[in-house]
Amino acid sequence: MKLGEKMEIQFITDSEGKKTAAIVPYEEWERTEKAKDILEHVYLSCIIEERKDSKPTSNLDDLLNAEGLTRADLEN
Image 1: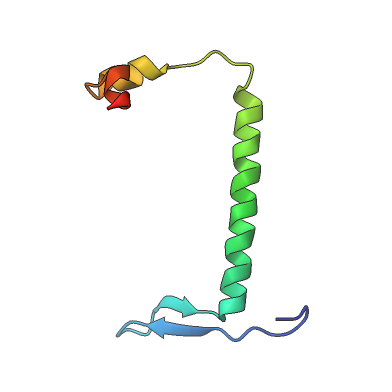
Image 2: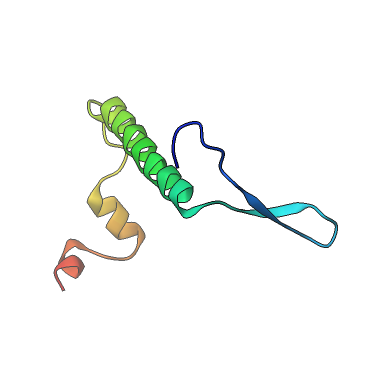
């Protein structure tokens, strides 16, 4: 789809005529999926930056213990 080109969206409706889903062209869907991936990476980068100098709130052993596991269980 080119810039300025109108995208054709189709809607699926329920028995009352309320929109329940949208059908978009595959190229548009693919473009939005790529945008979501980029936003997710930006979001995670911000979280990492905020937390990189902070004190850990839990460690691996605590997480394993909560699940009834040990480090030895990870090796098996």
